[in-house]
Image 1 (cartoon, rainbow, N blue to C red):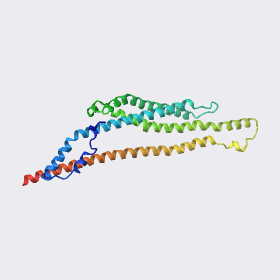
Image 2: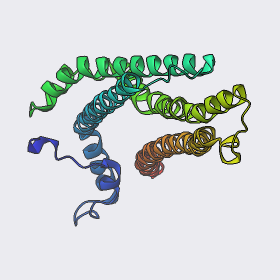
Image 3: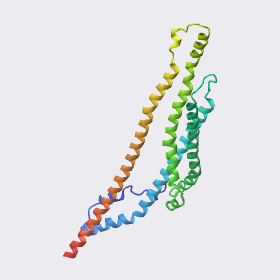
Image 4: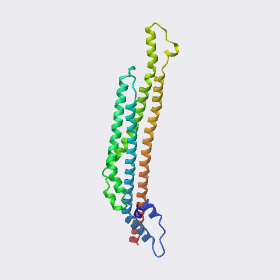
Length: 266
């Protein structure tokens, strides 16, 4: 960016921490001058805030596009490469859940990718112009709900669906492991033979799928808790910063009003 963007990040704090009044200038004039400097710098502060929003929107769109392309590609590969055992009778609900989860996962990520692909070029074109006034040409303010929607679909809903996809895929891959010993047992029973003890109690596939589910459930809970905590911390930070700026402005106003009343009494 050009030197025009090098404005102070916290104008109220800089105004309050200004140098004390010089000789020949009373305290009232110094406070009034600080207040006027703060008011006249509001235009540049608003411009800097708009540029920060522009860069944040651009970063969100880039992250959404990368994450959506990656996870949707993995989901498509998982659906194509999964090899179903034709001799094993899968639970119908398992196959329906896997198909629905994969389809919704790909649709959600592709929708987020579509939003990012449509908005990101317009934001990039404005962000590369080194001019403060060009910020009005960017559509990030009007398209802010769509940007947040793409961000939420890609990083929150899409990742939760991807975790569910991993669990369902584990059940589909590991359940048929016990099918071969069961088929051998049925054949041996038909031939009036006894099944060896080491084969009769095998449940390796079911246990492996159950372990993956037990591991993934706490991971999903931790993910949700971390997401809520992160957004709460971010909102709290923005609120505290705005409150601090408002308090600094209120202090300047009280100082000016107090000196004006003191002059009127005198």
